[in-house]
Length: 71
Image 1 (tube, one colour):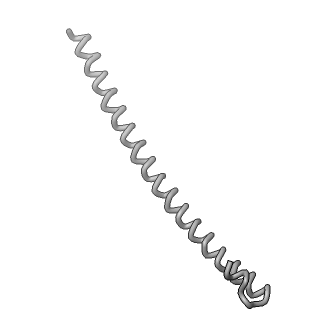
Image 2 (cartoon, rainbow, N blue to C red; image 1 turned 90 degrees about the horizontal axis):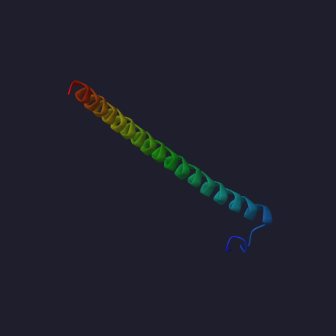
Image 3 (cartoon, one colour; image 1 turned 180 degrees about the vertical axis):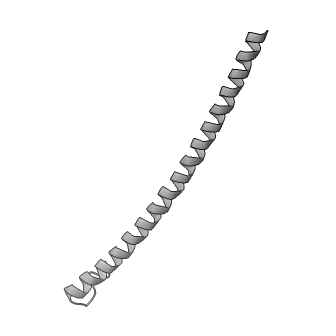
């Protein structure tokens, strides 16, 4: 609000508002990009964990299946 009531011409005031808004927009873009990178990393980790878990359980199921056939 203080910028709007400043004793400057309208063009100067609009430039100040534009610069400030641009700065905040850049910050938001950077934070969003960081958030996306973090979430992508976490998703990849979960995907790897699930794949590993599934492979272990499938191997165990095959082992049980073999043991049942040999029994």
